[in-house]
Image (cartoon, rainbow, N blue to C red; front, side, top):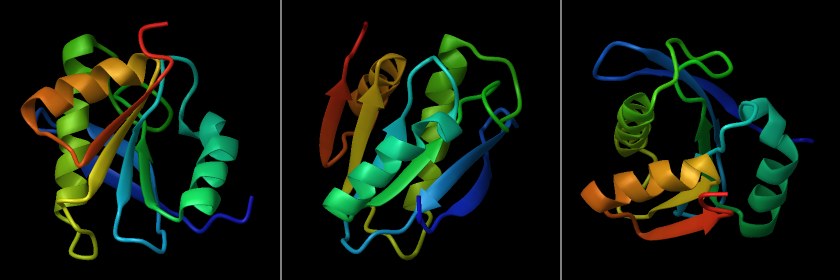
Length: 132
């Protein structure tokens, strides 16, 4: 779909290596994407492209443990640890403004985004089909 992206690997506090894609934008706002239960990040390419081209934001989407190319076994507590590791990865990037991160949660990812927001408030919170 013509997207420039970088494969990213990062590690959670409990030692799981997770995989994601970083799509650079042309604004100083970054969308941290928490996908739903079905599939993995590769199943979101059309949505990623649409949001990226329409909004121009930086975008980071990753797979929870046990999804896609991420290590581990899925669990509720694991997704919360995964979300913290993804946020820490973004906050560690020198080319991003850590104060301008928006959490974007879809379906199951909405619960993950809300849990993270309760502990580390974002610039904004977008929930798509939460708890469906």
